[in-house]
Figure 1 (cartoon, rainbow, N blue to C red):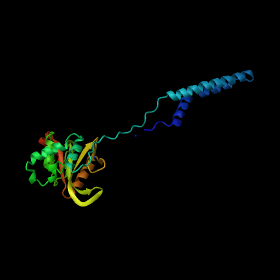
Figure 2: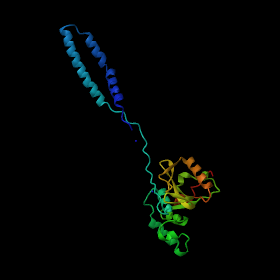
Figure 3: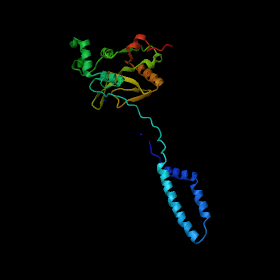
Length: 257
């Protein structure tokens, strides 16, 4: 393919406030009022300095020993696996991005599946697949999913995506037209491209391998809007990635649909 400490001034202020609440300052004032003149005044001055020194130590001790308020809670962003585009391996990237595992499938795995499905490679229109450079079709994706106990359910675009039971769908793989690039240049040509969509920590993400990073789609309703928009485009297809059990029981369909 961050909490700021308590400001020093504010924290010290809290320490002084604590001492006043304990009655330290009124006690000092009452002692000074009871002192006479002369020797008693000098003794009072000495006592006042001793009291000030002792109170100063108490204030420092109170400030340093008071428990700090916990920093404001900050949500740690979820760790999202996003495989970037290499060669024409978008099918591989889409699969690994949906499974959130870079070791779920490898190029060798897909190439072996391709060779098994297409023994007469000289007749295949996908000549680059013969060299393991990618450009794998839907048959390779479906067979790859089956090796891990999953199925790819082709979505009939005549039906609204509101009838999908999202909680029973592991992820989505879309086949969409995408611009070809030559280095930094975008060519006026399009080819079909596989992209993965997956929910992570309650948010759905577009994990297109051509993006610089995961692109947040949002909540389930935002996902439905995203899928509707994609399916309105020409030459766009949608696959639901579901477990064998979900496929067998057809629970990827909403019961009220």
